[in-house]
Image 1 (tube, rainbow, N blue to C red):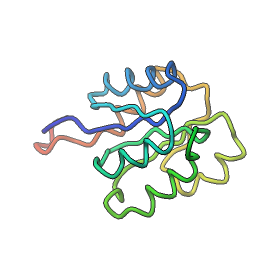
Image 2 (tube, rainbow, N blue to C red):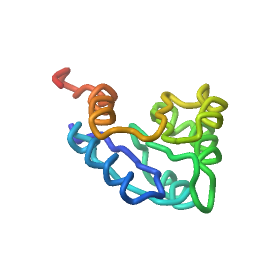
Image 3 (cartoon, helix red, strand yellow):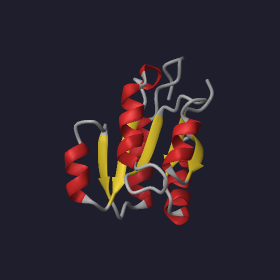
Length: 126
């Protein structure tokens, strides 16, 4: 089985790199996009297992990206983790997301979470 894909939608390159490294340790393949429009374009061609989504993005907001993901039947099994420092906005969107992570998010916290989110191998072995 190939490694599941995680799409990281984050405009802060440092934060995106931390997310990617934590997910790679949990055996995810990762792709990073840095604005909402690029994310929507990318999501037309891939089906990630997990999306890490910053809510404050250039071009198109994270909230709009989240709505598009939830409206796309092809992405019905995609788990969306919101990553934001905006607790009030996160609270209004928590019903649409699988999990809300309030920044700052530690490397270890995300790595451990990613391991739990990883789908089991087809053989049943992790």
